[in-house]
Image (cartoon, rainbow, N blue to C red; front, side, top):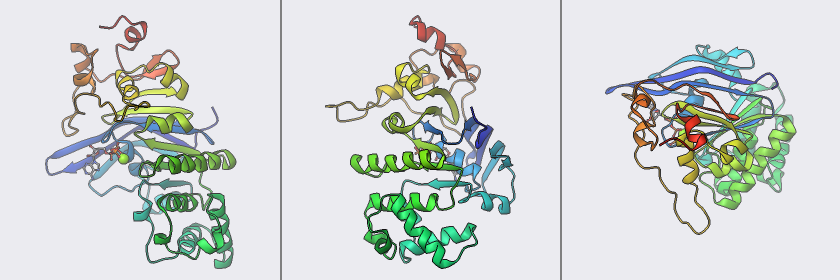
Length: 325
Ligand SMILES: Nc1ncnc2c1ncn2[C@@H]1O[C@H](COP(=O)(O)OP(=O)(O)OP(=O)(O)O)[C@@H](O)[C@H]1O
Ligand SMILES: [Mg+2]
């Protein structure tokens, strides 16, 4: 693998709250190479967003971040505000689910992109405007010159998300973090947005982290996947391996919850995730797991090789052989 542009090493995020310390992220590792797309998948509350918001210094002051998160060779954990600002928007850009809340309703689309460009590049307003129009064209906005003069309310949801992508790539970042970028969109527009992100990754060799709870999105665009549960990575696999043979019972549950044609709703995994104010001493999934044994509740299982993947289930070998009961 090429040298990673993003590398997390035992990243942890805790929040101080009136009820105690919430252990939201409990030792996450991740490496992403240039041009690679890694999917991060897991149920709501599993720590997907907090991992990356923490790395970028975008969490409230109640958050305590430890471990390591490097962008190239810049360490982000404990970095000064100046370093964080230099990295954010320039070397790492983030796209969120709700583009309307990230766009300012009273400024023209073009001016918002110009502001993003001029925050990191010393170029004239005219040159930045030309670049803004070019970016709108890149993300598939028709008549970009006219559109640049319009306001966010004149754009549809899908077009606003394209604008967010244009802003994210304005400074040619090494890493793009997309946090549920298509969840609020209908399936056709969702496919178009994924196509735009995928094309940018290929043309600009941008590393992409695709955060989603939708395995369909992962199947469509990601190369590799990390499955998160209760603030930890429970499985790391190539996309094909994950879909062919998930090694962790939680990943298996997720795969069963994908809606199929003719089936109108997701099949939920019975039970609910642990309370992160008091995370369990062993495997967080154990209370919901059909394979759980008493030892599962004693120590937190580490990732270990299982076939072509890495699994954090102590029974992964028995499960693969079909002898677990
Ligand atoms: N400011 C905060 N203070 C306390 N706890 C927080 C705070 N922000 C997030 N958390 C907790 O951190 C955990 C992880 O949250 P996170 O937003 O990363 O989940 P997620 O996997 O992105 O879920 P979703 O799919 O719903 O976006 C949750 O238990 C959440 O309640
Ligand atoms: Mg989230």
